Amino acid sequence: MAEKFLTLRQIIDARGISANTAYRLIRAGKLPAGERVGARSVRWRASVVEAAFEALNVDRAAKAPSPAPRPPSTDHLNVAAIWLAGQAEPPRPVIPALATMFGLTASEACAVAAQAFELRAGQ
Image (cartoon, rainbow, N blue to C red; front, side, top):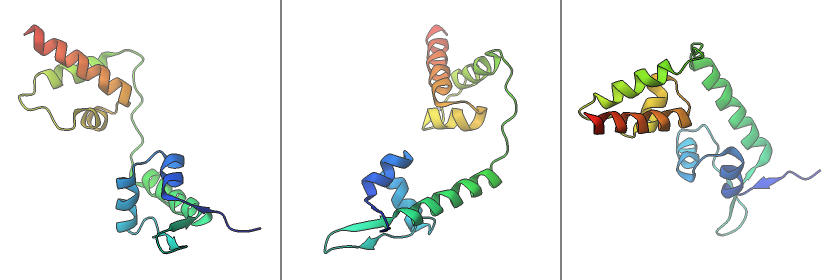
């Protein structure tokens, strides 16, 4: 069976990453550079891309500490909102910073940012 080749667009759509992230992975040597299939065409072997992302996931799993179990209440969201509202200079970008610092999902971080905005407006 013939090897399947992927375009960059197919890779970033399938993996949910941006083109910048893909190029960053290539520069870092974590994703191999594609193969020229024409004067202006580059493609990646599907098996090579799959292996590279599998290795990335293994690396991330080994490096990332397991998140602490979250209580069933929303206290952690309130703590994060109060912290953010009290910051003279909030971290930029706010949503990823909240997600990293407090172990929140993106939607939780958005809710925290909205709550912090309301808290600041009420002061």
